[in-house]
Amino acid sequence: MNEVKVSKLGPFPKVNKPVFITSSVLIVGFIIFGSLFSETAATLFSFLQDFI
Image (cartoon, rainbow, N blue to C red; front, side):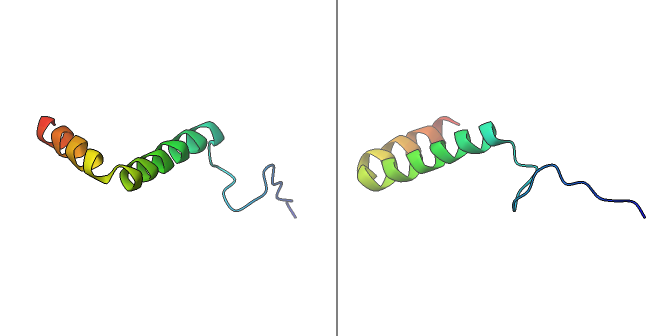
């Protein structure tokens, strides 16, 4: 029988760590910015949505 070799263990073995860490930091940053500065965030995101 053929043996299956697993090089990476864990729940997500194909996750690119630099991409995951960068996107996680950005997401958490948006959450913190939106919760601490809700009025400013609403104004900024509304402007960006109109611009796009």
